[in-house]
Length: 252
Image (tube, rainbow, N blue to C red; front, side):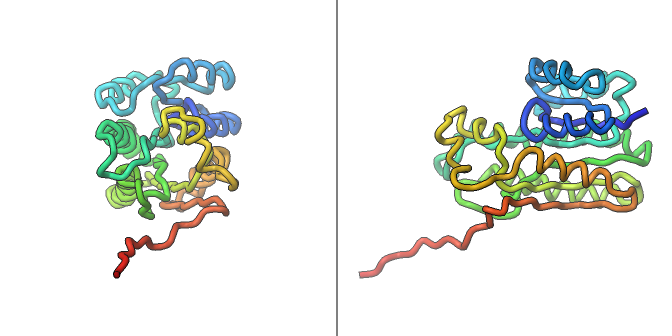
């Protein structure tokens, strides 16, 4: 029987693209997202190899109950891709909305933790499995207005490294993939659908695509079992981490 991959954030962007990629290569996919209508549309496109799994990853009770209720043919998850995540707002910390911070923490951190904890015991019991966490270069390099989004992605990187330590002695592998600027619905979510603000970051450059990151996930997961790629940074050629910033004072 084909292997099973569970992908959160499967209704759009990187998660949806990865779901299509893995189904096309003979895998069964559990697609997790809140928007059931999008998941059902994806099932019509991909067929019975795709299982739509409507769930809010930030709700711990919902996550645990939903994973426990997976049908037998999808229950033993070989790979978990924690792709669900978002940025909200682009404000200085002193101006940011606390609601935006809460949403990022609940999704980018808590959601990832809940899904990981739901599948990890089974992987350890089978002594096989792979968890791929989608971080960001924002978790490696600070930038003005990055505050909680960057901190949440730094958590993802460090949690992945600590998982690697905890899983020593098993054949369960973990990786953190950290994309740079990638053109998906991310900016639309960040700016609540404001088209002008959403399009501005991509002007004049060629960003990464969801397909680029899906290819990276595929490559990481399909390394030989004795090989663990624990961290991958992926940048658009047109992007680099910026210079130091200074608040230069004028003197009379």
